[in-house]
Image (cartoon, rainbow, N blue to C red; front, side, top):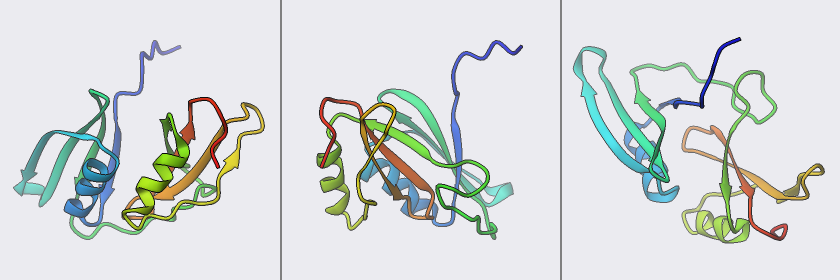
Length: 135
């Protein structure tokens, strides 16, 4: 058995690097730790942190193929982020013209959650960690 300690990072390839970088930093509130352009690959790379922890490598590459991206598609299903106040998070996203699905309740925990998409349609989830069950 491997002695895994934690998830080190999640890699995301964006079709519009700068739009996605701004989305993850300006809207979701991640911190840009490092950014570089790799000329030999015609690729940007950013290291993004959440609450001080490195979590996402954001890349651009020329001519990337599209990916089927629905929460129930085969492969990586979605990325989920915990929030204290789901209603407040949905309101903030809507101020940036980002639509969320209707709030659902997790039948096992009683907690509320919703899905929305990044600029490339990658499904992202917000999961209520505080008391209550959202809207």
